Length: 294
Length: 318
Image (cartoon, rainbow over the protein chains, first blue to last red):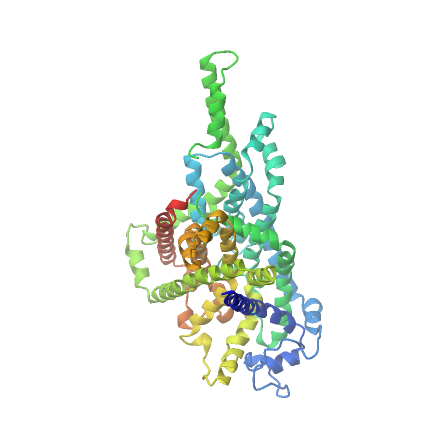
């Protein structure tokens, strides 16, 4: 009986370790491969990115070698990306000026809205909250059509605002922040009210400080979502010069695969930093969603 | 629970005799407080309500209107004509079929596997917090960043075929054959399992410990404990994870687009590809009808899932 138990646990550990390995590998490989020289990339992956190599004198291995550690660690790809071809940095900047305003504005709008949903209840408001949940659950295939229509009416199609405005009012943060705020003890708010605080003061001095970690975790979630966006730029911002790196990366010329690895790595750096710094907040943020009702 | 907080506060206030002792004045006071509440709540809600109306609700009503007229220039009411022509459209049929097939396979897998991972992490195994970090890491990595690796792995001359050939299995052109959906399902699971797992872990944590202890004392088997206790308490989370996974399954377009561009293999032509093409041709009728159909399908799905949860998790609510 006891022995069986140990075998089972070892087996579970093995399964978990296998999954962990599989989950981690693509990310790690992208990072390590970004330190390869172009010739090593061509040699290893020439077969995959067939048109990658034009000249006859480059060596291409017959098999594809998905290599973990580069033969020679080199920063040449990064130097090219960062210094010689500012094009990619420009695209990175495009991502930044799209995503940062969306995160700040969405969380800002959501915090006052969530306060309203927390502070005042009633039939109409709970219907409204339910409506926000439904809206949150609608896929892009539905919401992009109305977004497109408004953008064309307002004449902001093909500008950054076409993405920023709908992003600003996206209901996801409202939903999650309301879930957080409803955990604040009512007595705190009642006490402040008896002390003669105005609603704005209660919101600013009591509610927001209580939600600091929630705000951080929501900001991380929104950031990842928009840093990763593909659907909205394709439809609402077809102008390639304004598109974020998330779309542009796939169009990188096959002859620059080596560069692509370096750019891909640079592109994940903000996410990884946020993850390393805020993993616990993030986990808490996800865990709080719980269920869609109520 | 049925009485809202502010109502309770207001009731308390009403019971207290007013210093002036005049009933009329007290009534006026209450209604004034009520009006003030409404004003306040609207002041806080206003910006969001305005934004949501302008960018989602009003244009969606126009979308519904567009879907039942002949054309914006000739607004003749044609009722279901646009819907019928969209449903008969062969690209739409392909897109709907592929999207549905993908979701039907990928969503249950995502729910079951992530629950499995959460249960594994619940057991006493070493390095739990590391494992959690590893499982969660794919959600943080932008799809665009790892696409290169996926290309190397799933290409005809790629790693996967090389590995398979050592076992004597002939190579498969993963992205350009009926196997393409397998690839996308793997990518989908890779990205989403961690997120779902966190939701399940939180829910497992919330199951009353006493209940499980009682079950242990009474000699319940692990299977019995799982199906009769844990799963019942998990049912709201199962619902939520299912809905989330359905939503993310519609976002798998990202991976497909970044891997294969605008014109993928037939089996990877998704709803979003169809929408993109209609945006390009600016066929408002087709676009609107497709969006309304999609919205209807979503609403029906959500209602069905809510009902299912009502039936299954009834006695543990609250």
